[in-house]
Length: 293
Image (cartoon, rainbow, N blue to C red; front, side, top):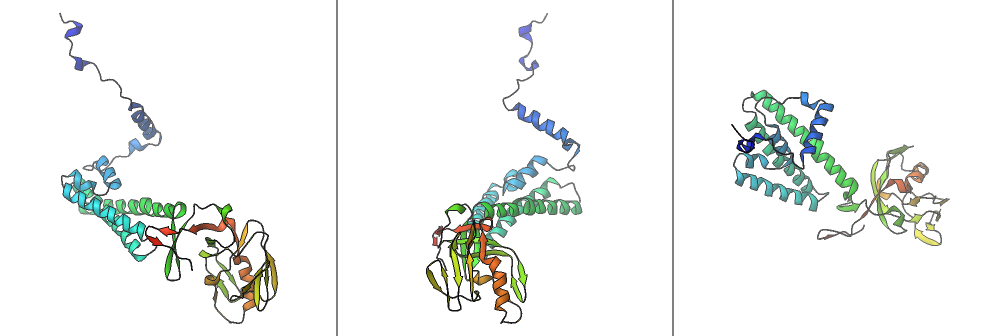
């Protein structure tokens, strides 16, 4: 007769771990969205493919080529540093392309090893699908979020100015340099392209801006006349607006004497609302000191 103490301990099922509810939640979610009905092609390890998509160089490490994996990872980090440090320059684009290429080299290698039982056509399709997911679903959205929330490069003349959108709009004052969004506008022989502008805040809400044929002035401060300014007008900057004269956004496509048409169009362009604010320039970007125009 066998007693209770004689029953092997392995008979009893293991206790649930602290993280078990996470797996239960994931199983419930898979059933709800019907992910459990999706099956990977035979010969493909889903976990390895997922890690290969997320971690640069993982594919080589997964198959024992650790030296290659370290080389790919170090090269990837170097390319990422070049992309960030030289943001806005051609070298930054090279670094960004190198990041994608290094990452995808591991993905393509992994897909080749994991799908060795598939024919060449299916392997090419899976590799192209992985490349599309990587570029359109990861890298380009991250780049847009970087420019939207942290730093954005703007080319001003022959130099690149890195601006930060995190600066408080309410703290912008007269004399500050700001980046702002410009909506495309057309008029009589006049074209203002859409995109981003960069200029100095000449006047703030409530300031009086007067134009004469010889000069222009903000309140009591008289300034030299600038190109295409109205000949004889007086403006008052409305609430939550700034006055920024857009020198670099003007292109006349016809008669050069159409200054009146230019002035009418720039009336809207020069009055920049706070909603158009895109950022203010950083004093330094790594070791480069940013100089204003």
